Length: 284
Ligand code: KIV
Image 1 (cartoon, helix red, strand yellow):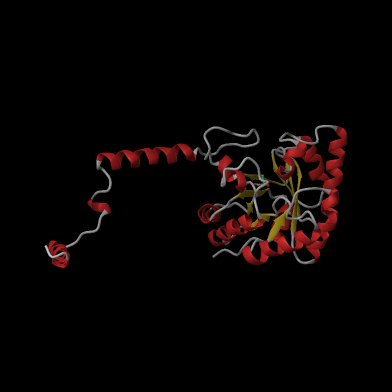
Image 2: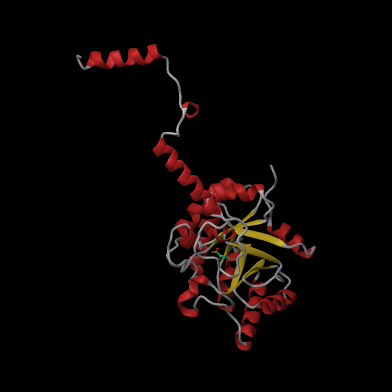
């Protein structure tokens, strides 16, 4: 069995200029597939609120939800580095962050947490790292702030771009081992990546970050209706699944499934004895 990828392994890849791959996964089955792929890291993202729970945003996701999903992922994959999101309001105060990150690592077994926000998070990040919790940062479009910043590309203007740069440097200075950039202009992501020592992981941030992350359901086409611009759909599994479901229902309705091949046999004598015993008990 392959050894689990560590943060030091990712730092080494970055030092060697090798691109880093990351995908979200939320359960045993998807994690087992990532295990078999060559993907380096799994994010148990709070995007699970939308793609697994069918909610409108990530805001309702709880620490217990993340623990539940991380445990399944840890059982499914033994090789990739696993990072779990600290959900909305789980790190508003440093004491909350310490308690909740401790639960994610000790109860669920992830190797790092991820949290959203820039310079204002520095004290919390330092406190987490001091207690042995590695932290991945997340800047740009930060979904937990969707109601204040809107779901759109961030840092298009000079002031906001400079602030994002300051935030990225503050996260690095605080000790984050990597930073996710979500929905920011590609040239800005490139410029900040060149100024940071730690790896940057992009989603909707262009090709020049140190690595990329995508949401499982977007990448594999599990929803028919919506393909975000920052995604490339590598498969359309929804079509495959629907084809299978339609064929299954048609076969059940026509009697084509199940057949003898899907059924267990029983000797006629054994069945007759069982029926006789029941008839006997019923006094027939
Ligand atoms: O929750 C998530 O899936 C994320 C990624 C989009 C980076 O934060």
